[in-house]
Every structure is written in structure tokens, then in C-alpha cells.
Length: 391
Image 1 (tube, rainbow, N blue to C red):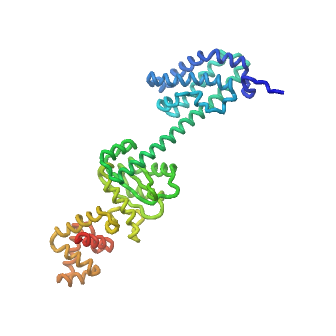
Image 2: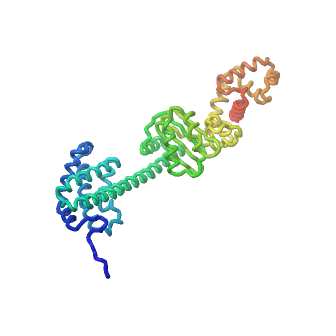
Image 3: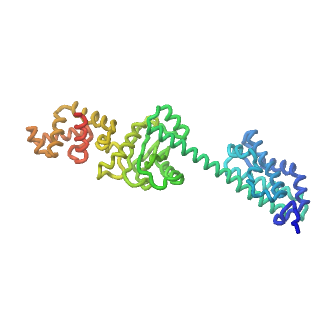
């Protein structure tokens, strides 16, 4: 015994005669739907002629798609959006948001519901209305899937742009290229740039990157998140409260130190800043008592020992050369002080001066270099600068 072939599935309850009526009135329904869109959707009236034409094509395909959906139930497993929209998804995504796309579907369904009683026999009105509602639900899910896939694609592309921008800043590409990559990634800030480097956690997936970026934009106008190997790198622009903001996002980093550096200028000028943060992260292990969150400028001795030429230049130019040019025996005094175990009395005996004179000169050292020889950590920075300067 063979199963009879029917043009509509019993579950829909739509008869062949009702389907014929629907086929015969597709043009009427299309015209009614387009008029309804003009009347009910204010944003629809503001679109350009070409954009409205694309959406009218979608509504026309939607009505013809309903006929095919009812007439060929065996094809319902195929992607509905392909049959319904054809080449229109690109136009749809370019023209309207997901919210407006769903408003469009709702308006089309409302227009069809209003016109069905006038064209459909009374006995077929309810089954046809139920079929329209089921069809519109499938269409809504199909369009939402299109937007979701497009969002995932844009997210992957944005992540690629951000990775290229991070790499360009770290490698010190020409300022024009960095500015171009920054513009492509949506970077808007022109000043107050910061670079942050720390250990990348496991796993550092897309969801993690998105959450971290959302936290960063609470204290920075722009935030780019990148992962290179085992390092998590942040590019921040238009920063308002860097110290407070970084304290709030420390938990996003893996174990170990988190090193930051900042520059007053634009991102295109941030390569030295990025280099300092990157080398500081490597060198921070040499300072066993370093805080978890630390500025690259506080790691000058460790960076110099690790071979960072920029740190050596800073130690030589901003400390040793400044002391040498200051006069008043400051260079001699601080050299003797750090080499005699940081003893005021031993320094005074070595220089044949009073201990108060030594104190006065050390205060002058602090004034001209911003590093205090009487603080053990800062004394170590000065001692390293003296060695670098002599070399």
C-alpha cells in the first residue's frame, strides 16, 4: 500500500483550495504589505529609494516564500533564508539593524493578517492564519541567524585588525601605518595613550577578550586587546584614571607582574612606550619585591640589565648626565654614598665634610633626579645609573 501524496501536510490544516486562493492573491498582498510598511514604520519612509526597493523585494519574496513553504513541506529542512531572501541578506544587513528587521517581519505579518479575511473563505481563515504565524516564526529565526553569523564574522575581522594594530605598535612600524591601522580598528583617541603587558590567562578566548574590552572602556575612550604568545597586551587611548582602572582589571591577567607605560601623545607615537612595557614585563622577575602592578619606569635597572637600550639611555641621560652637570659635588657625593653602604657617617669621613653637608647634597640629588638616595630601592636605581653612565 502506498501513501498518497498531498500538496500540504495535514499538520498545517491548509487545504489545496486555500492555497490556490493565496497563490492568486500574492500580488494583492504584496501591494498591501508595501502600503502598510509606508504607513506604520517611520524609519522605512526615511530610507533611500534603493533601500526601500531592497526591503520591498524582501516582503515580496516573503509572500511567495509562504506559498512555497506550504506547497513543499519536504523542503522545510533547507535553509529558509536562502529561498526567502536570495541575494537580499547583504542588502538587509547594510540597510537596517536586527531590531528593525524584526519590526519589518512583524509589520508584514500584521498586513497579511488584516487582508486574509477579505480574500480567504471563512473555513480556511484560521488554518491559514496559524500557518502564517508559524512561517513568520521560522523567518524571524532565520533572519536572526543571519545577523548572528554576520556579527561573528565582524567580530573575527575586528579581532584580526586589533591583532595587526598591536603588532604594528610593538614592532615600531612607521607612524603613518600605525595611524592607518588604528583608524581601521576604530581608534579615535589622539592623546593619553597607555600600553599594558601581563601574562595571558587560560583560556583567553573571544568571550574573555570581549569582557575585558568592556571593562577597559569604562576608564579609556579606546581599548584594543591582543594576545601574543603568553602575553596579554592592552592598548588604551583617552585614559582618565589609569591606576584605578588597571586595579579593577588586574584579575583578568594571569599570574605575575602587570607592567604599564604611558605617553601623552597619539598611538602612532607609542612604540617606545610599548617597548618599555614589553621589556619591563620580561625584566620584572629580577625584582622579587616588585608590586603586581608596576610602571615600566620603575623597572629601569632591571630593564637595563636585561639589555633594554632605551632604559640604559634614560639612566645615563636623565640621572648620570644630570648629576654630572649639576655641580656642587653631587655626583661624587652620591657615588661615595652608595658605595659606602649608604652610610652618612662613612660618606662624610670619605669626603671630609660634615654629615649635614652630605644630607643637604643628597636632598639636592633628589631634587634634580626625582630619585631619593636614602630610599633603598631608589638608591639602587641611582647606583645602576652611575654604573651605566661610567660605561
